[in-house]
Length: 609
Image: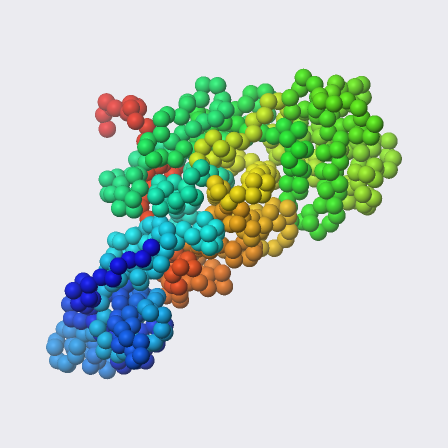
């Protein structure tokens, strides 16, 4: 969009000073000596006009990165007492500001002249300083220090020009997950800006820590009128997500009618361990509105999920991946449905097999109804009980030690405490990502191996669907916290390779990732480098010096060590310097104690203090 030119600067902007003449100015930075009674704070935006021969009027825009003050006339530190307290020494108090150039218009990189008047950038001049006039779809994602919106260019998120977002910061202070959902809420709340990308947008989220994401449909007790006004200033009506519960357990509360403009959310969790046939979701904070999920042995084989059983980086240093590939291929050839038992399978030699459709289990055959049974069935081919040689069609003639290592890992994974409860026969309890705008999968109670399995299985399913459709729209957004655990800097695994593939090819297929991590330096570079938009909250001092934060100015890095919750640093290709912004408190509860339960009676009412 192109903003019309405003009236002359003198009529629309506030003069704050002049370009300093003592030091050299440059096309990248300059200093401003402030007028008496004027001030410039860090993050303020300014504009200078310079007459350049052969070019005409050149507008130089910049952002204040440091504010300074001094006494001109003082020769020693102790002179401050003689000047300010006793008036015995003449001196002048001078305030100045260091400015980093964000833009020159027209794009002729010439330093501003010393002595030129400096104005605070407002209105259309502020938009030019932040390149808003060149953004086709500017989405407000927060407010600057002046209270005005700060925009992100959606073309660099949804795959039009770039894709993906990376969020980094100290755990519990940087509010990474809160900002990620704030951004998702803006995507779903402003279809007039997002455009065609907003239609049928689907977001897949993994809850990996606590149960903080299980309250998105509940209003927050900490959300007040001032927060609501801040949301409306960004163009979104602040409402929690609306509950949608497909396939919920009996007695679960059905989703109420969503408020106008509110996106829907569905919650899924694995079944409790050692619960038998009772399908109770493994969550403690809430039971209503959460649906249990698992994969049947038939789905486990058809979707080739065996590869995500071996996601430890150490497995790639031996021939276990080779054995896994052979076994996975054989399972698809041998698996036959069992009549009368949905999801169960039996392994039967495809050579000479004549039956079609569900088969009856013959004497001596093993009906596979869970992962442990599948592991035992595979063991009959790789480690025969009679001590004979393994079936080479399944093992590929690898060393006996590799086969033993493969089977040890498989049997360990099949235990109820790890993956056992995620694979069971019965009616399909497949996660339906089309049932709600946002799908939250609660895996915080699972073993680390099981968490990687669920993440890998669902990401592969999402990516494969987009590959088969060949269409970029509708968009699929993946929100993954603790990204360094699934795509670590060192080592190899099927999950890491898939995340790199999503980072490299996902934007062209409409699969976009919002990754969050405490330390960007611990994430695979191939994943991080493909994120067009980078957001950082409070950083550890040692972490801020890493090369992964080279997109930040030195002054911004120093500030990032002191940022409060709700304040972030935004970097995007559309703006050449990082911008500090704050985003409002979210209207939904971010933890159980924030949940506002309308109509509940106070259990302590009437008691004497």
